[in-house]
Length: 276
Image (cartoon, rainbow, N blue to C red; front, top):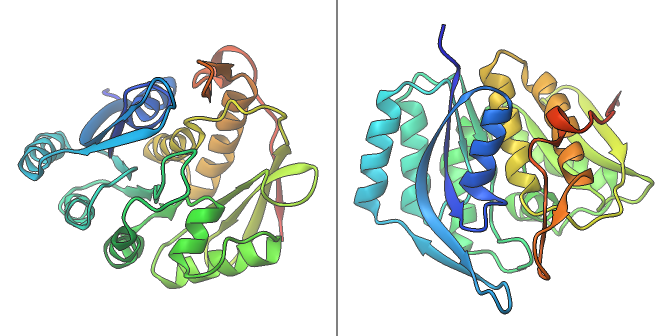
């Protein structure tokens, strides 16, 4: 029996911490067969670590998608998508596939930057991706942009954003509150249109979190591909990425990266699930 096949449509991070590199490392940790469609390449200035984004030619995107879809992925996730055209191509790819899950990581900025890569991307995500999403995985800033609100700061504001994203058509949403919500726990909020779950872990006093969002979304994708429900998938992914951050390391003077395989090689981390 072959492995479940997981496909990421995203950007490649030359440093190896985030993007497709993180996705493929995570897929491997879950023993799924990872495939990739590279829609942009992100490099960093060694002196300042400022990001430089190079979109892939659309005909090259089309050719990659043709190959990947011929291999019948079981689950598909998206990451950094550089244009409205590529966002629509990602939607069409999922709809033409037999994949049982479409995981949307609505990447809008590179870590360390505050400006949305392209304001039109938000509109395109809302139109083309969210209505078909099995689960959407925004952080607080992304949740605010998607719902046309200020960045949520309180649990109630996060819940309102989750409700709004479900109303857009997503079946499930997990908003990554992390350390951005007051309290002594790192809190993520899951909602399926009926029940809220607060996924809590200890806050980690470390800045080794480059690649955390990509790793979280790809862990969800792998878990769903292997048969877990979306709630079970986010529970497992939360523990996986928390261990990755806790055991992260300083790559250079600019950035610290997560250790993608820490949950399997170093330690499992306890996550509490509180239904509210």
